[in-house]
Image (tube, rainbow, N blue to C red; front, top):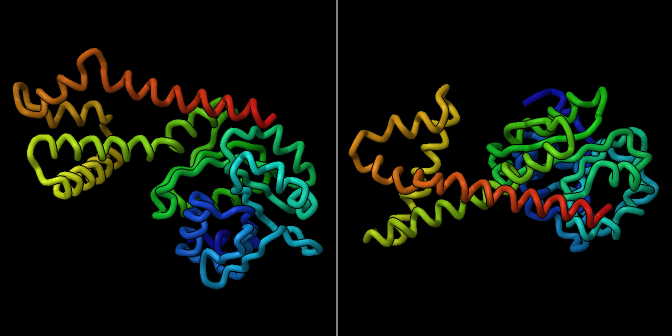
Length: 270
């Protein structure tokens, strides 16, 4: 764990739903002292032992070093004024709000010393996620990366369009992969396997294959061909997936739909 990470704080989380909660869980597991964290959520229920939790954005306190904006995008208008009043020039505002562009955030939170968009995915809870970043943070880039690194792979976008594309692939991707696992398990059940056994096999297979792909110098396409002997079982299955580039076309349309919705959401929040 980086010394910069262990010394970081105070951190405020405005909203602590599934994604912000997953990030917080990993940070605490990685050694972030809970007393440096304040969670602001309407329920007032603390997400973890030792984490101060309040129902409203605190007033009259020193501005936080980092403020993670994790409410639903449509709730931004409800919290924007109180957040804007509480931050200062030393505050780095990190938004995980899908579709809310940097210009919109910078205009609403003009007092912040830095504003950055982040798009994590749910495996960050295990430290095996992806975090896409976009924004101008200046000298605080190392500080931000130290905070995000325990969550998994950290990738910077060159521009906001690329950030949206990264969000469609890596941010939405776990849901698409879960669907794939479910489909493989269902196909195994159709062959005659018990449903629970098919699901265990499908889940373990995807986990192991992803590990091999991540650790290999060869592309996944080459790895697939290495498994497939001419005329064998794997080759016959690949012939179905490769026919008319069926699988690639399906996923291209899937990511395009997610990216298109991200653009629509951005237009709605401008």
